[in-house]
Image (tube, rainbow, N blue to C red; front, side, top):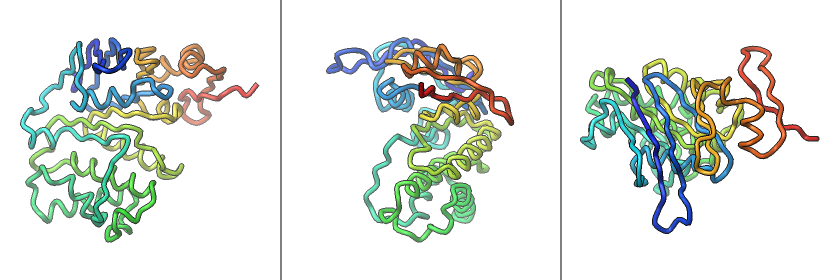
Length: 262
């Protein structure tokens, strides 16, 4: 059974002249990576906020399989990284990542091991005593990523629980090397049966790492399926309103989108 099922979701705030999302459906299984792509204003962040419960939906349904309603237990199973993480207090990097362990009762020693492991995964171990407010944008993003990974990290109390990670543009401000590091970590989390929904602007990253892709256009579902089903010339030209060419990657065969300059 799906970890997350979204069925015919519609979101229209009272002041909005038109719906932000219309009849959006998708499903996420344990261990599955689902990427959401689309142009600016397509409704990608609205979808993440709706699944997270930050925005009310007017119709349709969002159903979680075996994710607790109790806030503390739910926080062990559902972690969210929004597009913008506002933190203006001068916490040290270690302390920010440690916030992800607050819902758990795994003990100081175990938590310390998990925190350090997550910092290493995001290449911020050498920043642990730095003040968060002094970091660059890319460094802050990696700290926040380490925090949400620590929140879902398997422990004796949560290892068998269904878990879902929601990421809104997690590669923002990351250089090429750290983007690759993040996506490899996402793959490792999926191997632990964590379901992942992530918004990506880089279509080629989505094509390389996603199990399924949802293409959103003006708040509507243009296509949903495997990368080979969605990353096609007709869909991409409709989605981004520009001529493109789709070619296979020379190493692993996943589709690559190339913008046609002419």
